[in-house]
Length: 298
Image (cartoon, rainbow, N blue to C red):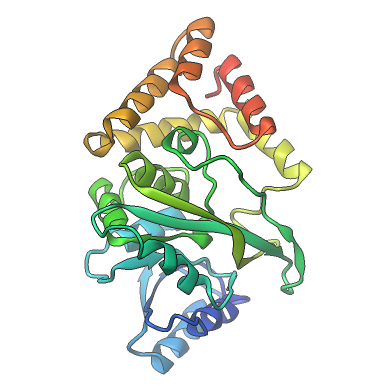
């Protein structure tokens, strides 16, 4: 768990982890220079659950960096790992359900569980469900879209070791999109559960919010036109090059076609992006992908 000034909601999140039906867990918290009393709250839990909850203090000013440092920490010993945000609430069977999938996968195969979320307001009142994605998870999808929120993700040791190979100093748009790409690119298995096991809280201090409203779609289109998506693709491609040798031959070909086509002239770019096979989950998303390709914002 990466924490920065999360005092308002963090107790509810930690309590929901403590209350999991799967009780064999440990919680590693990275407090990123909080100034609102988060550290004091967390230390109360570390005293109460001394063998299960620990904290370290960092000054990254970047939640992505904090999560990467935790996931690349080789002293954290387990077979399975999960990201946790500071302000959500886990349903009591979140870990149990995730492990039911992960334990069916051979230990040497990277595997990732993710799911929909129940979107709630600051008072934990239900607002809606997150978008339902129907197309299969694949590396061709992961290059241009992440369907798994980090707060829903649970992954195995083989996946963690891949993330360790790339290290914690890479520049990426988000730790969850990176995890989704790496697992699929390296031949791993991803299961997207259409049931929600996270109560995803929306409030005025969210760093990343829900993306299922018309306004959110328009905001994403605005970011596309401003070149944000192209910047994210630049970062993801540079990061993937650090583990390119671990991509499957098929996915390395998709990656190289996509990376190469982005820098071509309009007609060649359109043909190249199409031949790479990349896609988003919805018609609206694929229209946006086409627009980005035409405008050279991909």
